[in-house]
Amino acid sequence: MFTTENVGLIILLILGLIARSNLVAAAATILLMLRFTRLTFLLPVLERRGVEVGLLFLTIAMLVPFALGKVNLREVAKSFITVPGILALVGGALATHLNGRGLHLLNDHSQLMISLIVGSIIGIVIWGGMPVGPLMAAGLTYLMLEVASWITHWWR
Image (cartoon, rainbow, N blue to C red):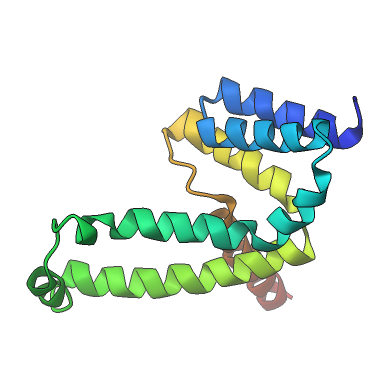
């Protein structure tokens, strides 16, 4: 029962509860339930497709205002010629690029995931942040590693 995997998930559950991060607490609880009910065969499926399913639901949530008729196409078209609209376009492209690099970083260094989650919890507790997921945190981590590498290389 108290294997390394279970203890790690229990710690994340406790940290999620302390930080009032329902997403972290729920994720740890679901994974613990899968482990305790011997449904561990689902874990590789979640590992392979979990990000895609999560991004699908996140994208659906972001597009709901269109489905509800709260946003019309004329407003969308006008936004492309405003400074905030152009900056949103650039921000979306940059964030998507960083998220892709962050995903590669996590695939190559999965041990960083716990640090990203703990960092997200710190961001929630100290700055009242919103944990939209470790992918953006991984993208920012990738960017910081690239900048640190560039500075180190330049400094020599």
